[in-house]
Image (spheres, one colour):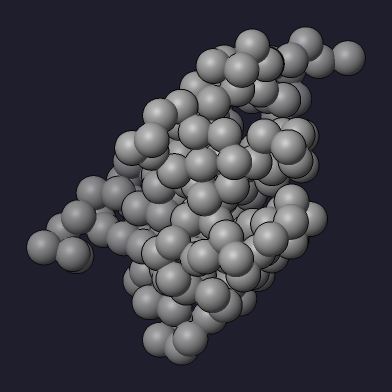
Length: 177
């Protein structure tokens, strides 16, 4: 099942990369078609950097904000994402990578600065692993890469709601200069 799913994810990912390349080419600048590892790296960095921007932008005094008592705080969501990134890296590499707890304790990352650094490092370590694995390794572990990319994307969407609930505009939605 993993292999069939991985193959399906690869086809979707490659089709998306080709569509994105085609759309960029239509904008006037010719684009080289991405390899599987380049496409995965671009997606990983895109959503990872959006999350890091949110983590840096969100006011520290609101890191304990949660829309209701049944969901994680803003900080807990960031810690969950970073911990999950390391869990994925541990699975993909077969070695222990970073703090791979599903929900690292806020007590272990008491400040905004520590939380941002943890998230930033998890994204950077993921990017480094993609580059190290190259196409063969990324395709072998595509099930993990695509799944955890999607995981980060789902939590990005959740955090957009946190912004909107506080009358704030997420960094990615702000007018570009």
